[in-house]
Length: 472
Image (cartoon, rainbow, N blue to C red; front, side):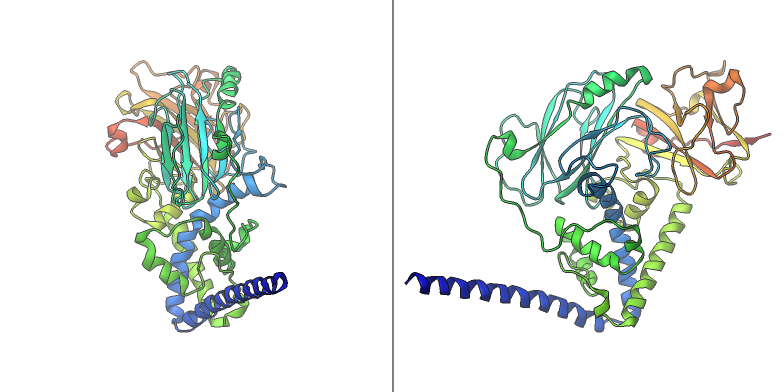
């Protein structure tokens, strides 16, 4: 009887495996049928739309991969749900993220809530120190905030949950932060007052904690969620070829399909974009692949054009509701400054051209003049950071100054209250060095102004930043 029962079980298992395999084959076959029935022009249009849609996810995953997946990366911190804090200001050697922030050293973590929620604990922080914990889902929506503006500087505990979690909130939790993706990147920023403040900053950062729910509640670990496709190895070249579809299919497993995207996902499926379904370009006719490659090229061209003409980034970062599913803006945000804050938290502006609309170059000298009434109103502080172009990295310089702002030590104002910054490669002279922001020696550059705790005029674009003036 036991042998008969065992045989029945084996038959059931084999039948299940065969059925599952057939379903996968049917999915792939159906994808190919749909692709064959779509015109090349439509394939190109879909590929362009999908490439733009996936672009911010891909570059968000670059950071997640380096921090939590790739053990050989210098940024690797031992896996998911672990903080990595930096208790110094950024330098030109930091090239993982473009237009990196140099005023509030980072405490970053790649979070995976596929199996269970994670608890964030933050300490009480002195009132004159700004800090923020920015929660970015895989899509790059800023779905929640903890920090000086959003929750205050008191100690707190926050439960970070994925889209499918329906458990009971344990006692002592101040708020549940619900993400629509299971992969999340947490960007913490804590204000550094001066180089002498590093020891105090370290003490604060060491108190930022991430704890799996089962550890927090002293229970057994939950079963591990299984995905059909593994997390991909990150390769820059993949997103310039039809391989981007395979990467996107893997990442989409960690997302939910928002009701507003049902038609969009249905279009994507026509060229093989489906969560968890491996994509093999060799199974598609050359004309289909050519149409997809054309869509990628068109997507790149449009994105590059928008970045080159970017004048206001305030509306590029936020929740799904605030961005209104504008996928091009989401891609522009990722390309121009991944992990930018929602405008209520911080406003970013800047320029790569001067007052005469000419490109800023290190071979020239400039002054950036703020009249007394033109200084931005900020609850916390504001700063200006220098970047080279086209890389958008910090600029090496003899005084190791990469940013300057209203909290900078020794800053000098004019007798009438105006504030003048000197943007040039060589020193403007000892008496002006306190207000000097060094530029590259010859190459093009841009600068970004960050305003933390912006007031209404800044948020609503009533306030306008002046542009640099070329001087002899």
